[in-house]
Length: 213
Image (cartoon, rainbow, N blue to C red; front, side):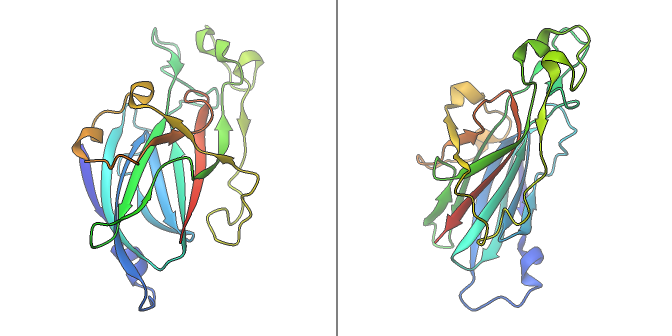
């Protein structure tokens, strides 16, 4: 499913400088994303993160003045802090994530894509031991089902934030991520790549940022 969002009202209520431009974005995420420009939200996945198997693309427009910082929050579905899904069922498992995006200007020129130029921070990593996946009674925080979680750093999506210690985004192939439901409705430029944290299964929530000059 491809959803068309219009993000312009979020920013046009402000007194935009004459140098602001209208940009268009396509984003596909497994399972959920939020996108911010200089700390202001311009789009959010229309399918809640609590929805299992939600894989949809979103297309939307926003206004920004260069240089600007793109802040991307991406989350994979999990039932609780174990990082697992379908807990107690035969298909109990760790989920896997993935996100891809591209941004164009009004003339159709490429402005930004998801690639390893992005800097990312994992704020929820679970389970710490993958053997939790086969536990008959997985309990978050216990034994193999321990987890590592942290809050969003203040101002991480602003130009003034020092992200020099953040890691580069990890790149994955389509065969590794298995994108579906909306992904094929977008014509992706060749340079747009699927990105995520260092482990597709254990990295459940990631923050990624890119400065567009």
